Image (cartoon, rainbow, N blue to C red; front, side, top):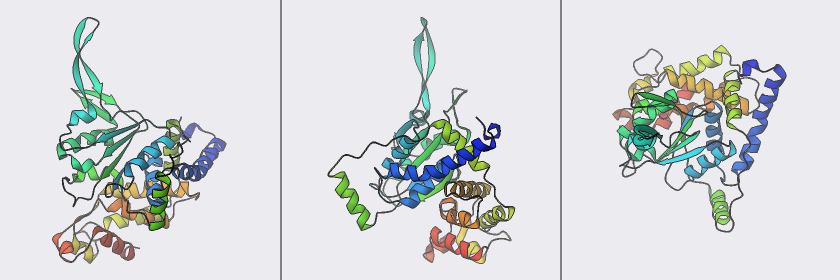
Length: 332
């Protein structure tokens, strides 16, 4: 049901459900996940805005557990695809097999694991680019094409991919076109001592409590529409556009340090993701409109996988994070 067909009272009730839902979601996730509050917030923003998310971190940081737990909270069908060097595109999307139907042999399409609501592409950068590219159509069009036929994916549909740091052995860099399909690149780091101690004690002394589903797939789709209806002032959206435009070297809006350090800046989709993500953040935080602070809070996860630094930045020891932080200082 579209939010346009809902009464004012029903829309207000839906907004309240979203705002109260964050605390309930975090309470359920705390049964299996300790700490990582920023990571959880950014992952929820992606889901509430109907976008895909890339999670980067070393092995053993509970990336897979986090994604599975989120799918359980929203009562969504979950599939995990373990990406390996020998994985083929058909292993993801599905393949045609020769089968006997009504006494006649015919080709039947067998759906692959991508036909789910939440698809975990685990260690996505451990498979070659040809297989990585099998996700492109699904992520953009929410469909799969096999033997000239199109098969719609279930709604809602999310790709939540994990990747290991690119410096690790046996990894393949993701193509820029695919990276751009992800709303956020969320960085997950080691826990503080107190949180890590709690995880060790809890996981070695008792079984985790089962997660109770709080929403349905239909709820999630209604949340998507409410996020898009969230009001934003033109000057706030303009700030997002100015930030993204400033990342493009050789353009009038680019600061001197961008021309020096950046080889390739962010495209239009980055500004769209900034605004959409800021709307979702404002809504789940109980705000009545989008603020500059909502935009600034999401600049790092939106831009860190969309900027390509040059050799000068590498020679000077400048990271993407350094470049984005300076951008936030200079662009007002």
